[in-house]
Image (cartoon, rainbow, N blue to C red; front, side):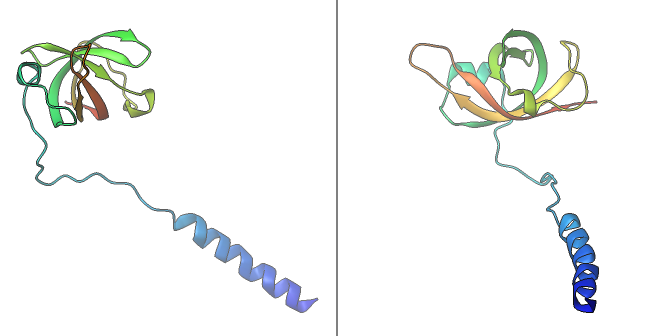
Length: 121
């Protein structure tokens, strides 16, 4: 009976330690090779899978996960999954930064597949 109690006493701290050992998530904030271009430059010479970082506004939603993004130089479709949005509310007046890749197609204009979006203060 005493062995069973000792095992239970060891299980509780081991379980708690395992729960707190989950990985932490943080973002890299150093230099980057991501192109900080413009919508106009992307539209002029779209390159599939080109990494981009843009600042501007989501002007309107056109479908479930598609928005019109503008940085002032032009407008482009941005495909953004709901899980990518920050906890803050985003409207057409909110300045945001999007990071993603250019997606080109034969029968449609280029789009940005957004990997991350954050509100710019």
